Length: 486
Image 1 (cartoon, rainbow, N blue to C red):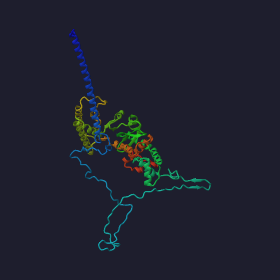
Image 2: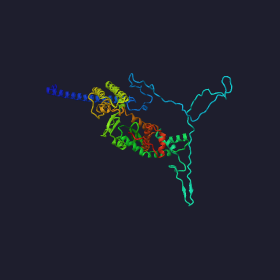
Image 3: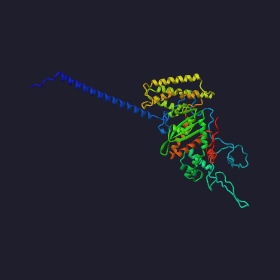
């Protein structure tokens, strides 16, 4: 018996089921393709980010030159044709070892016989003298001063002792000169205490223990309370102050050193945290009402009484990095050239005695600035919202340059504001130098001692004081204080 042929309804049902299965397969394929495309896009973005990081150097990022090793980038000068050449300029006095008029010691060398006839020259007339001076150190040795404190008996039987000199309280002790050198080696040259003690023994013949060096540094920092309070108050009252912060290893953890700097004052403080708590503890920003120059870190904007100015050295480095990305070179290079041009104009105007650019010229610069910002946004359409991890460095930089236009160009409107934050960055660089030479600090107390001594030495150097002189004064209980600023 032959099987019955399927009905039309059954065939249609089978076809519908097959079509549904194919639709499900296509949907699954599309889903897998979408997932694959998303993974590929994420991997491409990750590769691009890693390549960007590998391409970072001291020219296009905040990395220090010491991190580059031997693979340093080719130098890139922003000097335009027609500007001054590199090196010393005509008329620059320079520095060299020059002869002195009154040497400490004179040695006369007399010729004994004539080179021609060999006669004696003992009674010959001196026709000329050629002066040659050798600058050298005398033999370094400790000078011992003995203080003999007499005890005298009166006829009434009372024995009276003479008053001992101030700070001479032991049968033997090192004076403020040796203690000042020890503090200088640790606070200015960043030597570990053991190496500082070894240096004192080698150079001065002073067998000092590492424990003594630590004690002297502690006592020196303890004598700086008045200095620290004075500098803090003067910085809080200043018109323009540069601020920066940098990490420091303390007790095997990351701590933060905050700096407040002007051309004549420096204050370092150390704290477990980086943000507002540390800034409040430093004591400058809460009372400051002037122009704060910084790198754009957000916590600086939590203080409502500040006027802000952003560091354009950071912007130039970031613009160099952004210009290397695809499609960003035009606006990024043009923005960098504009900032350099404005800075050159400001420098020339300041030399001519001006205090700010002419309003019309400043308005033209602002117009060009705005046009470049618009060009940057056109090169980055459909940018993600702020505070998302998907935003590119170009978009983040554009957002900052656009949102804080006045802060970027503050130096052009007010000549007391610097173009960069280099004053603070050069000061705080000593923190990194100290960590490279001696490593981290064991305690927060030691970190704060280091900050107090660095504040003292940096401020003294800015005011033309010799570090060893002011350290001797400090160990004599008479710390140097800067003259009040106008």
